[in-house]
Length: 238
Image (cartoon, rainbow, N blue to C red; front, top):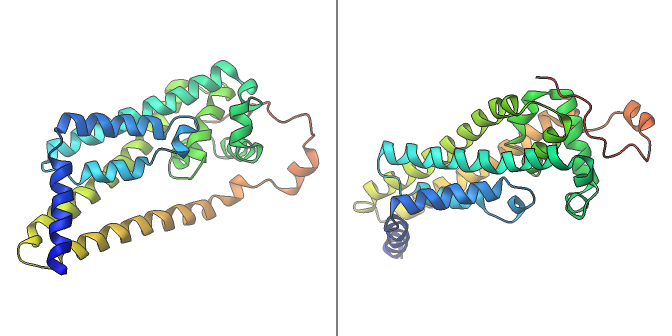
């Protein structure tokens, strides 16, 4: 039974590695472009695709190329959101797409940007839903595109480097152990499960730490008017 798990896992890793490196890089980059794009990111499993692509990394140069592709794809997707927000403004928020996102998420993104400034752009990359809504909201605010890139690029690089490194090291270690340990497959699966659980836990902790910047206080509730939604953040500090 233990050997069968190794055989199955080795076959899956070999299948991924049999795909030409250029195609793996392009697929991962395209997946991240979609994952960070408006709404599409809610349906494209970018994390999973990056992890699968990362298991095939066999050298530093190959891993670096994959990270670059992921970062570029992410920046393209987030830039699309930024410029949509800049071009359409509040109309986007009241459109069918905006209503599908939900007014609650719009308000959270707007409030977060107003309170945290550029740091919100960096941190939102690691927060569910907000990472798709924040670029739109930043575009609506009149924030400079170069400053937007200056905050989001390091976040994308951190995210991509972490995922590719963990997937590549775990897969490489498994291949080294598979010949001598019949339960090497379980070790690999365990490492990946622990990593994903830590990612989920990290996001929960980060969201809890940032909660006071995301939730409206009593003064805001009293000051808000029914017809004021959708104006976008008046200004976002650097």
